Image (cartoon, rainbow, N blue to C red; front, side, top):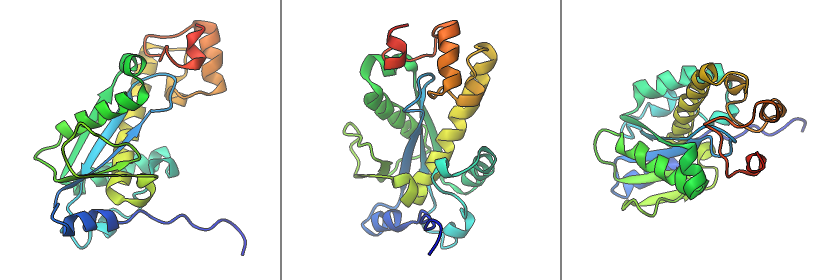
Length: 212
């Protein structure tokens, strides 16, 4: 056999298992920007209509946002918004990342995304992180964005929202290349920091920024 094995597509096994256990409204949560040097952390919560038998067909192509091109993410975002029962987006600022650390800031962004949903949810599926302050049944799974359809949908929502913000910020903070690298650690970003110094949206507690 040659080539790589195809990556499995996300499915609804976890969501439907929670529904069968008595939790009909399941929110999938994921974040974008956790590892960036600059910009906020963005989290998204997506509630899918689990009663629909055609849901996998309606969301065909939805997968971990890292496996998709920007054009694919934009197209699939519109489909997620059309199909989902609820979509919420939450943010944590670079200042919060510096103040409380990226894990706590990510939890804050996820809690804020849940607050933006219309109606209550019964359980959470989360990519890796647990939310101890949220009093709901929850499953935090490694690589949930690759295995759970609602979390994959949330990963697309969060990624597109954050990318759009970084493109907009590039207009106000020109020279750093935020529209291109979205605040992540690239050679272009490092060179811009050496030339311009940090901007107001850089995370000053992170190693590449501390000496600046």
